[in-house]
Length: 150
Image (cartoon, rainbow, N blue to C red; front, side, top):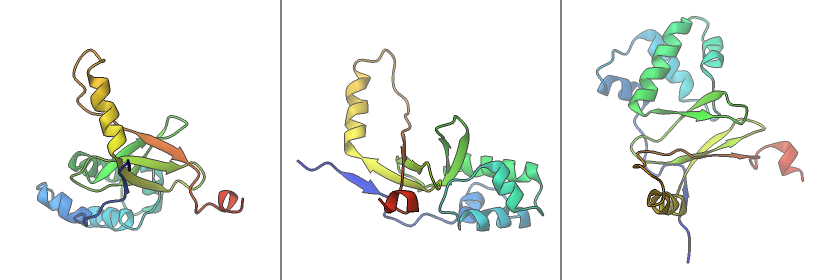
């Protein structure tokens, strides 16, 4: 029996600006700068770090724009091992989970049938109705030199 685990999204996601515009939000110069920077990121990012990378954009604008993307489902908010939060671009329209590299911060998405079956089985044993769940696996990715070397 083969378990189904799929990495990353198979279908291309809309651009971040398309997500904003489809939600009825204007495409302002600061929002375009934020979207452009985010679409280049392969690793997780904090709101403060993003703000630091865009000194011409006000900190409040960065936070508000991140919240717009979060509400639209274009980015995901992830817990880290130390309890802080980072964000990551995510595939829109499908339920998924994440791996977060503890060395370099790389974030990847995956879907696993076994996790969804487990949640379904647990729902019979948990009082109340499960309305959502999240899973972040903290890994040492294969790209990190410390791990790749041996």
